[in-house]
Amino acid sequence: MSSANTSETFRQYLCDNVRRQGHNPARVFAGFLLAWSLFVLFWTILPPFPGLSHEGMTVLGIVLWASTMWVSSAMPVGITGISIPTLLLITRALPWENGKPPMAVIFAGFTNHVIWLCLFAFLAGAAMQLIRLDRRIALSILARLKASSVGRIIWGMFFVNIVLGFLVPAANARAATLLPVVQGICNLMGDTPEERSAKKAIVIQSLVYGSMICGMFIMTAHLPNMILVGIFDKGGFTNLNYLNWALLQLPYLGMFVLTQIWIRHYFKTSGIHIAGGEASIREKSRALGPMTLSEKTLLAVFLLAGVMFMTGKGSFIFELHRQPLGVIGLLGMLLLFAPGLLPCSWKAIQEKTIWGTFLLLGGAMTMTTAMTQSGLAQWLADIIHALVTGMSWWQAVLALMVGTHVIRLGMLSNVAAVAMLAPVVFAMAPKLGLHPVAFTMLVCDTDTFAYILPTQITAAVIASGTDTFTPGDYAKAGCVSVCIAIAYGLCIMAPWYALWGMPVWDPAAPWPF
Image 1: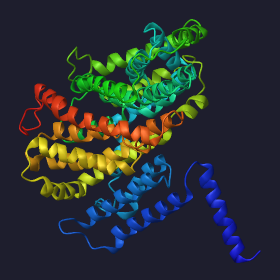
Image 2 (image 1 turned 90 degrees about the vertical axis):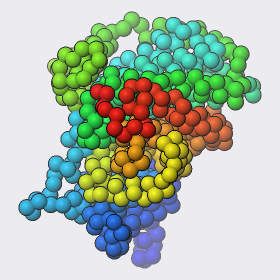
Image 3 (image 1 turned 180 degrees about the vertical axis):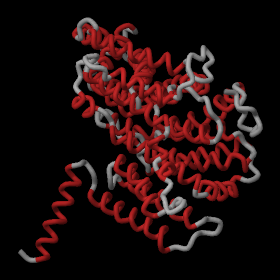
Image 4 (image 1 turned 45 degrees about the horizontal axis):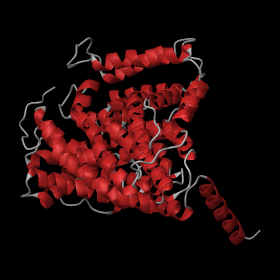
């Protein structure tokens, strides 16, 4: 065989493998080459930009490398995440001391206590799926709400999302859990234009909007929350436990009312009923039989962990202990895997655990630390500050919210986007005379509501698999929903933060927790 034929055979082999993984070969290989080109360019070729050190320039190259990998799906997100500390180590992007690398900083994302809290949530969520407790909860709630109309189905799914938010971490995991339930409901409907529109409303609101909005309220239900908590903790804003976070983010649940009004109007679902919907849901719920001992045991472990989360340091209810969230998560794992407590094998649980997201979160948190310590976050903050100088607080927040949604058009991962955005916004707040926590939360929270393209959120990618809506349907509804989210942040959340002692316009306000 000639060398040309061998080369073509190997190229075809690579392309076929990429297609089998569900990706576009042209996009993947172009992204892979671009990512490494940017990394080498900023690490070894370009001189440092004015005001940026060589270390900061190298970290910028790593940030661009990771961003390009994430956008193009050239590598799995988890592998990209774990590679961030590797690149920081081999490039010496962070100063070495006495000939030794700063391992504590390089792997900071994997030693932060919130990462172990997330691992507990991932493992417990995997056990829940294996014993089907998540499905029981979803069907029980829908049955009790007598979900027979489109509106009742959507509101029932919203309450399901709230409950599962405490038990199943990550919006994509909840969307995947609810997918078969939603598909079963949609299958009960006919194929008239009205019923097709109703299916679109049910899928978009239940699997996408509901999952994301509920995730804002519960600390472990949305992984970008963990990144923000880690940044605030290092910045001296401590004691953000489960309860404090829930109180700060509680009003976001009200945003679902506005999106429901809009979706109901846009898809014209008022008055549409689902024939046999209530009976079908009751039947599926009864088919599960009585709650098993393993389900009760797992629920008890969750409730115990919940009590520990809410009674930790700085609790408004009662300060029972002073252990950080990560330690509670580790203790939860010890209890969860006590001999014979659950019927699930370790092999089965690890197969259901979203390890890629765990590695992505750790790498993303390491990247935020590197951006701060190398001066890159401050340098980027200075650049953005020049663009918003002279603006009032609400104008600056609005400008960055809009800019965030523009950037997010090309990114799938919330975690990756917030990892890049949060340290920059946090560093910029003092320059603008704004409260660091309130300002960072307002800007970064809007990233969650990237509803214009289905490819911006993993939950939306899962929802699009139902084939009930087109990208055009999603975008038309999503543009208004994004505007609702931006207005909600400015008009509802900013005053709410001020009520809790964190006015975005007052950088000197004492930390209320």
